[in-house]
Length: 273
Image (cartoon, rainbow, N blue to C red):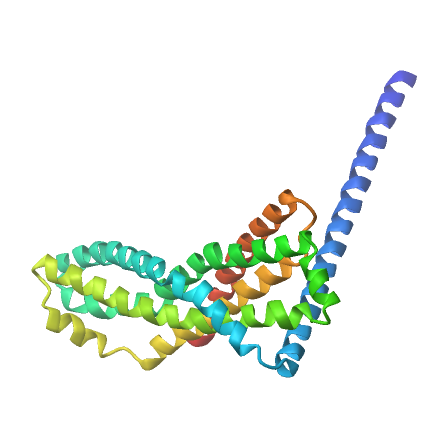
């Protein structure tokens, strides 16, 4: 009995230790998450303050608009074109079966304007622009260039972050609008090649949609652009030393941006539509 009791006590003691370790780990994780949320909130508050007080950041923002946005135009156009093309092919075949081919234009335009173009554009920019911003700022942090900027009496928030955030917020809705046009035209190509859907009927059905279908998607683009820039800048300037730290920050920035985009997209859809 003594041996059995000792074994039982040892098992219970080990389980208590494991449970205590799990509780401690969970508590540390919660505390760390709250600290990150607090730091991110302060980061956004400082960004808003610096946006109001910073002068002449527009010139730097224009440079970032070209680097981050204009260079992404072709990628956005090609991706939206083929995604909507595949969507239109599948939808048109089903519509034609049930004699509802005249609704193809309305369905393609609604899907493109509300969801496909904003999401595709945001995903592309999260992978291209978000990674570029976080990697660039992370490299500057690791190589102490940000400290050098401070030593020259320059505020890194004003000089590095404010132009990037507003450039990304400004250019994303424009890319979404471009994707809207490309998506509708790719659907028209499917209608024309099917030989069973008249192009006049295709474009005529689009007119029944509301202007909010377009503006809602463009508004989503602005929010997604801000999410990408904020997460990428915040994570980039906190990169740890070494190439591994910069790579880890880049990965975190892209993953965080994508998660933020998909989560916020749901709530925006509830509010806008």
